[in-house]
Image (cartoon, rainbow, N blue to C red):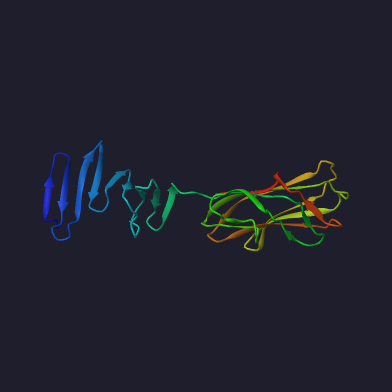
Length: 227
């Protein structure tokens, strides 16, 4: 029960004398705002509330709410989860093969080692040890990988191109090696649902006698991942 009621020309404010909590309605710019001592402003439009406050609440509220913080971040509260939808930096990775070609031995499924990067805004790709991408957050990721190889002396032999998720085959593509003096590029892409800490790797298999080389090339042999 409010201890005091302050009725003004554009607002009605209720104050609890014990707790000091403030609740009220304020008319401004053709909107009706709900004002409290903790939440600076709530504007409700079509049953969706937009809240401006300096910090996010510790618990979600019932219904659908948007929270805009004083650090220019926008959050969506569905009533069960809080998701940052702007102001956040999202995954953008572009790794490539640098300095030397990588030999893929005959008959051995071998991880492709993209050992350099042009982009990795969240430091999710390891280009030194594991040569893998590890998702920092869950979501939908677009993955594009291109491998460039020299011409083959035996175009009837084949390669198998893999995306592996958490160590298991996720998508594969089998192609015949082509005899082409200019070399050949192979492309594999997909849209993948990942959870936080899921990881992705690229593997290659060939039955070519003597194996095949993957060219070192920033524009020819690369892996791109975007969320």
